[in-house]
Length: 332
Ligand code: NAD
Ligand code: DAU
Image (cartoon, rainbow, N blue to C red):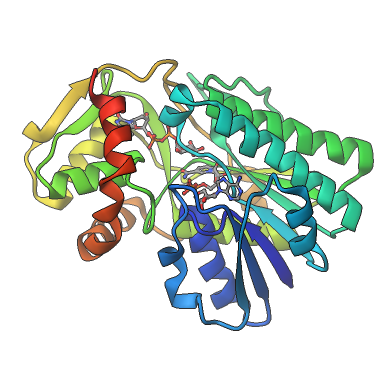
């Protein structure tokens, strides 16, 4: 297969490209990425010289460029997005541009060029907060922040292109990922790197919001399976099956880093903070997927990765990040 992966220099996309090149020696991958603050070519330094891999710098909202790079591919897998909820509360515009208009641009290219498959990567956040039970793919969308509303907008657009044009689209909606190469604004790498530096861990609200944690390599396997075996027009939830309150996760990170609980700093809650996400993943499990990594071991491996890759994350926590972080937590 020849794949166009968009947003492949980010966290999940880079892990996915590595997975594809390892699992499918006959595949070729072109990575189209804008290299925003979250995109990092170091994430793919080990495959940069692989003749099966190529990189193009650009925006998924650039219709001409997208048509040029998409011509002749067997499938497009779209990871490109503005992805951090807290940033969407400060500057939502980029979220609408990339997460909605960018997806429209991809859909139009797939339609015009008659590309055989488009897999769009979405999120459990589109269902909104789930007080009880677990979200199924047919549940209504109730997004509660500009990020999840933009992602929901894209999901509806993808669904409309299936209904209207029978465009060969698929969607995955996964729960919270963690693992190597995650930008240190997200809670797991932020708390690990803050703990390693003996800095406070800013825990929002009462710390009892629940997220369902999924190791990124398990998500990559599920995405790959859906890409190759999923049915057109279908949506697949991908949940880790490990729901924990943030305070429990925080204590576990402190234990693994060998740091005291006095580093926990309760701060003002995130506005519109969804209380709980939970996915029913029986549909993707019927395709033959289940997470292969146990949560405890995967979190331990993630802490070890950040310990061993300080030169990767240290520069990311200065400059632009420092300004953002002060803006974010200064008044909390
Ligand atoms: P990330 O922020 O780490 O990476 C996003 C990548 O997209 C970056 O490389 C960035 O440079 C690129 N990008 C941004 N705007 C672009 C544009 N206009 N054109 C081309 N490239 C652009 O994000 P991530 O955590 O890897 O998430 C990847 C996808 O998975 C996103 O669509 C996100 O909504 C979804 N998702 C993430 C999680 C999670 O826990 N991280 C969970 C569920 C779904
Ligand atoms: O659920 C999937 C989503 O997971 C993805 O669609 C998003 O792209 C991804 O960013 C992530 O969103 P969350 O908002 O759940 O992740 P985040 O790491 O920002 O926060 C996880 C939880 O931790 C959430 O309840 C807020 C809390 N938190 C977060 C940060 C950054 C804190 O308590 N303190 C913090 O400093």
